[in-house]
Picture 1: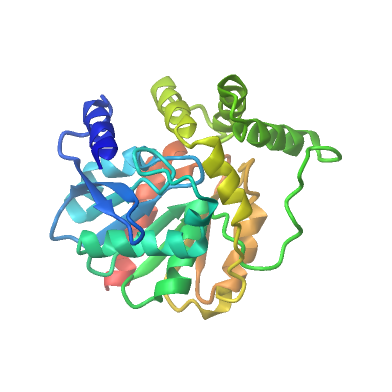
Picture 2 (picture 1 turned 90 degrees about the vertical axis):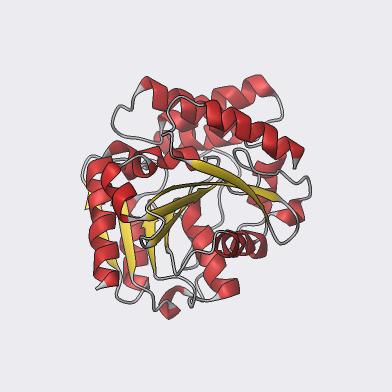
Length: 303
């Protein structure tokens, strides 16, 4: 736990954080420390933010720092295992569907969240599905998938090289392969390219610098483990009975918008909102609209 505590000191010193964020390192079911941040109205409906592959709870700064959301909701965000300031187990067996689902359950229990709405970005959608598989729906109120990358139907296997891919996809694949290198210089080159592809609009230099730092905090061995433990949730798709909102940018270079179009058809009663000229990070590229869509969705659930 001393390493998590040291990382907490770094996070407290980060200049972009609001003064009223509080941090805590909770313990997962298998003993891995998970760092969570909390802000907002302690008496409001709970929102639990789950970031994507290679990201961090800092991805959600435009939500956690939003005055309207802070006034209305109790907001909690987590650094997933292997990511950010949380623990990074060596064993590949520590990054399974069971682990991801158990980690969400651990956060809900440790923070005593009363039926939170889960909000997951990209791979965070798979983490939410892992939670539903292993813990059911009873303790959550709804689901928001932002650029969701969860596998809800059979798909062809991921290519192992960029050969034969369209140029844009080949570039993305090459970046991700470099991100898996234990060589720091190679990793950095791939990560720079990956971060640049997250958004279709220009983000601030501060946001890009932060993203590069926390993307580099995911070790190559964790990337490899996550690749080994990919899981499909096709058997759960038509069994979801929770209110579900899908938000996706039409210019998403990493997860095509067609994926959310199809997932909306698979999840009963779900709603899809597309953001024109927005990429893979709608909550960073157009935070005002994203935050308002979340407020509307949660308000509908509460009514």
